Image 1 (cartoon, rainbow, N blue to C red):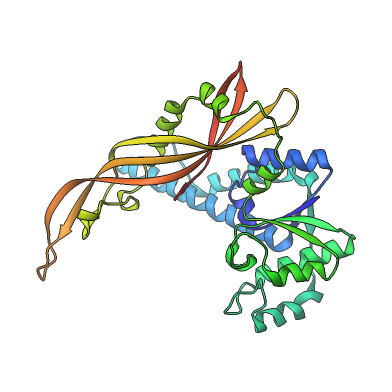
Image 2: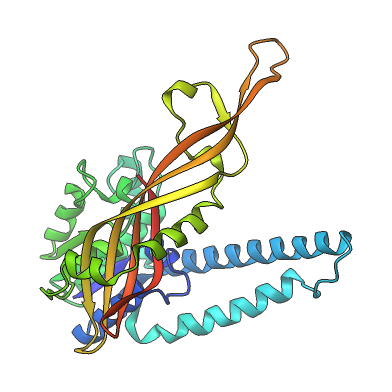
Length: 336
């Protein structure tokens, strides 16, 4: 089964080297399937990578200048050189995945239909007639399937607003009708994780109990605390009694408590297995907050350390080493 992807799937792992992307390419290889990448997705992906590399390089160059002004002697760093070198490495990495990718070129013959959909607000065109890009991609994927007599594909996109129905989980009825009109079944997924879960390996021995006996929850909590410590205090929730207070800076005395929610397994072979673990994480910390004066100048009249909290859903990949589960990386971290 070929898989069409939106730009957001690729941008989530721009170097295409994470554990979930590795599992996706493993699926493509063992099922002799292809990753369908439309021209608009390819161009947008390249543009996002270029902007991100340029932004990161500029920040590093600025930090070097600041360090020099402070009296340090850092190595000479120029954004242009950094960006060029990183872009070359990225191009080589992207080229390494070419074996699995099928490029869908722009088709000017589809433009009248793109315009009709934009004018009449037909999905995936937005209610204001926007999202030409999504419509071009969608129609291009359908045209590719029709030309190659494909009866079914998977489509992965986190853009629920333009591709989903009202339930935000399934494909919009208009898009289902588009596919059905040419005898095509489109299995829609809102994330790569959802796709992998559905096609994961059913290995019964990897129960929650088995995982918890072999996985270091304290190590995960330490890693989470390290990451969350870089999050601004404004992202945390204040107790109800502190309505009207505003946090600033970063949190302190942070404590993370992780609880295992879900496990699924991706087996590359009989000896190579990756487990994807989902944890519910509760964060408590202290944040410095201030309350503005009701007076005309709005000066802060009170500053206090306030207990704050946040809740996250964390996805972690782990591998088996000597009957122990060793964490590879935190794959995703989302507020809930």
